[in-house]
Length: 334
Image (cartoon, rainbow, N blue to C red; front, side, top):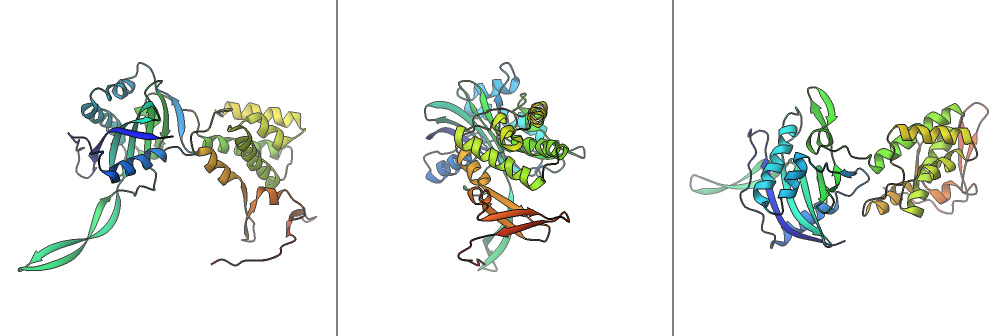
């Protein structure tokens, strides 16, 4: 998908200074490195951690979003101010810069809000002392992440239907770590992200599997394989496919599993966001095993399921033996 930037602005929120600094002029989008930086940041908001939802039609936040195409500079400051009023209540939320961007995704009008935290970095400073030049090493505490890193928090909104994608973090408020973006700022409860859905599946599968005395390593391997196959084949994460793969012919276990994941907010058959499918297949296409004796293994799924290549044996004393077979060569990589 092509991203065409139309307007962008940068607002500064250095919490040590005590007040936001709102720009009165937009960024110059004829500058290549600015376009590239913002485009990469927008693209990287689509991750397995991204949550989705629809903004409330009559919400104050929605009205601010809708003002952006007509009154970009002022509306972007008002939007950032609304977010900052919640963010600033945190005891540990860091200083940051905020980019508000109006753009088209192919031909669809969209808005992006990108929050990039400050990092500490070192640089040089040329000073003059007693008429001679003096090169100094100084610390800059407001360095932004480079273009290849995703924004620390942010969202995009499709202006045609108010559908949004959100990446948020927990910060400390009154001594408690919690989310604030979805609960206080956007006035709309998002669906679970793909990563959160997988966590629900894993937790419930472990609970149900324990009742039916399913070996944990087998069960988690089945969960991971089911996630991989469901996404690869359909582009969605489907509870029916996962239940069938993990609990096979155990109808009681499958029913209990499906009921409990639904209770915990699992979003069945939610289409994956752009570019997330490829990332997810790469992540779940391998089994990562950590044995109690300190050995760690990364095994491709096709190898994991082939008893001619790897075998797990349950010993009478309760331990497990892992046998790796038919290895032609071993490469030691430092």
